[in-house]
Image 1 (cartoon, rainbow, N blue to C red):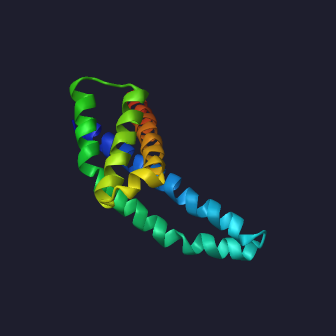
Image 2 (tube, rainbow, N blue to C red):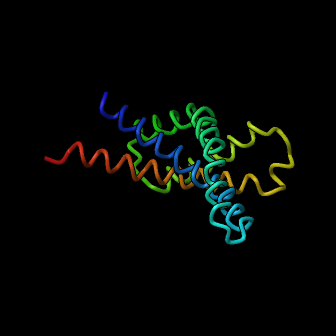
Length: 141
């Protein structure tokens, strides 16, 4: 039980990191275009975006902890090991998280939900991949 909990926790943190990377990529892409080829300006912007990225990671962890724990419990209870299950659950958690964070119907019409659905989808796939790898490493000689 202890190894499955630590495996799930590590994979969940990796999923939170993946979701953060997807969300931060939007800012990095905007920054790349805004720098207009000025490497110093681009590097400065990357450093400046580190703090907001850390905040996004923390908020992602806080918003997804309980829904992810429920999904992980369900997957263990019903022995679900499908990448599609975790990707779909991650996408749903992403949509739920932004809806809870920003309580406005504009979130749904602006396309922001789409970004969080994609981030959740990638997070779910990351969870699945990392959990599978950690389990395989536990069983290898």
